[in-house]
Length: 384
Image (cartoon, rainbow, N blue to C red; front, side, top):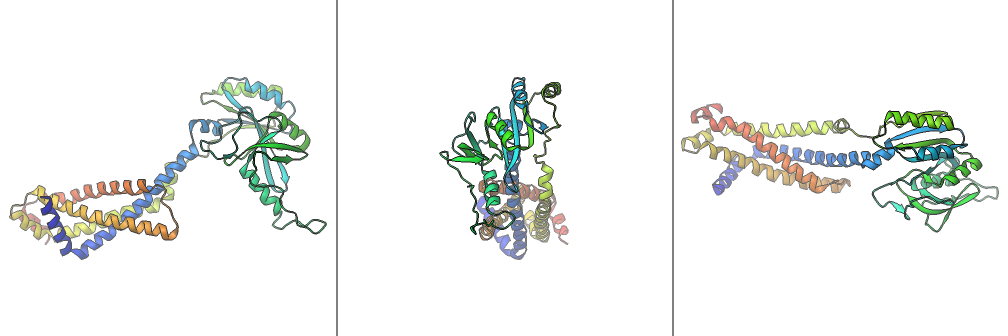
């Protein structure tokens, strides 16, 4: 039966090759759209979970209460008291300073050095505790310093002796070097690529604020997932009793993606994909209708409904397989020419094939159901 289906399907395709070429064009367009769709879905899924992060990262970035201050007097006492509160797992002091004009250099002291990333994206090993006289540098902060210090206001800075000032800051620091802030130098113990803050010990942070006067001074505590509103109120009262704040707020979660963001970004692609599927099926349905006299003759000759339906389905699957192979080659060629990359080749091509195979199989069965169940003369009359 399989050989019979192959021979008959191939003959019918060749007899109606112009119409089948149109069907194949529709399937190729649809396949390219679906490959792009599933690849973007894979990329979206990665970004969605990267933004939301692990449970520990969500707690670290989202479960925060901020208190703003003008100076660091008594904040050490606040830090020590908050560290002892149940449900608070980290207390942070943070502030900004301008080492060079226009470049914000953010420094922070954490009561427990955070897990910054599950990936090894640091120069040097992150210490369990930042010791006095040491610093963990931020790659992003160093990039800003290097750019702003070597090109202030868009022009190189000319000194009195006629020489051009070059940046005294580098992008990469090894762990045997020192980094100067104001009049003090710190031993570099690590440089992290994902973190925006430069980490100091609590003592060095307080000393830096008193000598250099940090701006945007904040005290932040990071609470556990089951931290209650009553505990937040108790923490606020504790902070207020030791050192009243200028202002306070709780972190708002605005860094998560929703499925609607994906649909908004790919709405046109989804519509095009649906139209391509329907276009190919409408053309194929027109081909089947024009073949009705041939199908009615087969019925008169005793071909069973099941075999006739299997023949039509097999033909559709043959056309789909060839068309999808062409679509994959064209899509990869397009990526090669434009420099675009598939985020997950196996996911995008494999899942697209399974999705389209299921769609065309189901829809092909639907559009041939009436044909296979009709009587020979009824099938013949449909074509008229």
